[in-house]
Image (cartoon, rainbow, N blue to C red; front, side):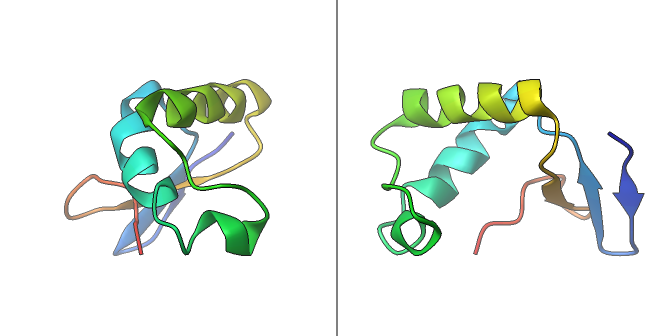
Length: 73
């Protein structure tokens, strides 16, 4: 997957190092249900989802250029 760069963000493939950021976002009770899935119960759940994202390589990780961390609302 190619990357996309903007002055503030870049979009790239997911990486195993994204597990903590993904969990911090996906554990929120108002996030998953709006997308049709349950909030992540633990980091292990996020890691399994992340592994599937990496294998499929069809979803972008959106990263703040300034911090190098995933965008979390």
